Amino acid sequence: MGFRSTCSSRGTPPVPDATGLELTAQELRDADSESILGTVFHRGRAVLLVNPASVRSVIGRLHAKGYAFLASLHGCDYHPEEPRLGVLYELLDMTNVDRITVKARVHIDAARIESVVDLFPGANFPEREVYDMFGVVFDGHPDMRRILMPEDYEGHPQRRDFPTGGEPVLFTYNEENSYGKWQ
Amino acid sequence: MAVSGDPTTPVVKAEDYRKREESITISSEPVGETHELLTLNIGPHHPATHGVLRLITTLEGEIVRDIVPIIGYVHTGIEKTAESKSYWKVIPVIERMDYLSYYFNAMAYCGAVETLLDLEIPPRAQYLRVIHLELNRIMSHLVWLGTSALDLGAISMFWYCFRERETILDLFEMSSGQRMHTRYIQVGGVFEDIPRGFEAKLRQFIKLMPTRADQYADLLEKNEIVLQRLRGTCPLDKETLLQLGVTGPLLRAAGNPWDLRKAAPYSSYDHFEFRIPVGTVGDNYDRYRVRHAEIYESVKIIEQALDGLPEGPHITTDRKVALPPRHELATSMEALIHHFKLVTEGFRVPPGEAYYPIEGPRGELGCFVRSDGSAKPARVHMRDPSFVNLQATAPMVKDSYIADLIATLAMVDPVLGGIDR
Image (cartoon, rainbow over the protein chains, first blue to last red):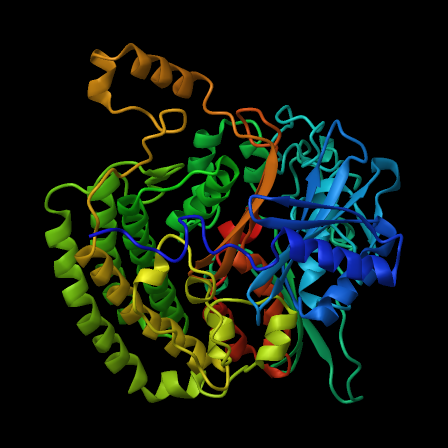
């Protein structure tokens, strides 16, 4: 008896194939010629490289097109490539079971991007995490603070040039000698 | 407060503590003149918060007007640690994120790496993965059910649930040698084939589990106190839940049957027949019923996977990724070289990015892996369902009693290891 499966071990291939991705990109370019910088189709994953200035409008258009669920929002440091920081939005169309990734790359000294919290209220915590870990500031976020690291922490630890180790463990007796700003 | 009289102890004044928390804003609605708002801190060390979750609650009498979750108390930087380990050594640390769904964490991570490697997994390994994933789902739901009932004052439920959990942990110990954080799922398959005696013990368990679940239902669903505390409390509609990114049993309790095992099957989930339990109104009772019903469905999946377990290798035969069998090392120079390369350097993964979502016990668990072509991942990110679902707690409990806040928190089932990572 042969082993049959309609899906591969790696899951069902997503619906936008390479052609579908190009069509979507073209549609977005027609609306705003500056918005799409490129497309990547790799291992069944469709990625739109988006101009950071138009992230919010592109996601708004994709939202209207049916990608109404923000599955994940995360950051990535492409050190030593430039622009270094990346913010990735994994969008999901639950009706057609179809995923598309929006990726925006920003320079480390101008790490600002528009928030999508008004479109997806669930982006609140993930955007705070990206700010905490990579230092990307989301304009228009209602509560742009650190979320996982201590609030008086200095630096953004998920950046690739941030060293690991060498930090004293804080207890009550030595907390006043710490990196903290409070005295 | 510092102990007075000891000159070496620095005197810490009360306002210092306030200063450290000055950026925590406590938003609240203006209320009538006669009422006064009380800010109450719950946690981080509180048994009802299921870990080290801290909630700053704004109360008006007994009514919750606002809650602000403060997280990060068990942030251990696992995502950063993963960047300095070779791909196969990341699995143990990844498993420790959400400590109740370790098979799922390993599955999401290995799935992402396998996508980057373009690796096909042998059928037997896929089935063994499914068996262990579903056992893990039952185990996670049992811990949730036991501790949630404990929060509602039903202490005996805790012992019954942990009794069945113990059997599952024994099964994990049989197949992998560990009870928790088993490192069973590997890149390319699973660590070892199931040992002799495992199948008999597992069949005994899946025969018993549905009757045990019936008994839980008898204990809880005929209990007036439990019903009054769960029925109609803190509902949230599916549109709001979707906007907040909530997935898993919480979304299904509100009536949306979204389940990645059905919607986008992975690891041969399309071979099995099972149903998706959905609720109707999305209150705490529905949240309890959906998870309870999922236990039966998981048992069905395990039974089918065990009946149809295909023959063949339990891990990929690609020696560039998986270790060669031990006996080959004595006779084959090639196997020895592969073994040495894998143990010292690990395998290299072609550059690229992958996002691999699976249906965890709490919702969509997605792992993002970026490879730069070296033997260590350049970025590992876990989209943990607890982290996203926690945002829904505040809209759920707004304008309800503080006792319902505790019940709702139990029904949201946050695992702080997954939230803080």
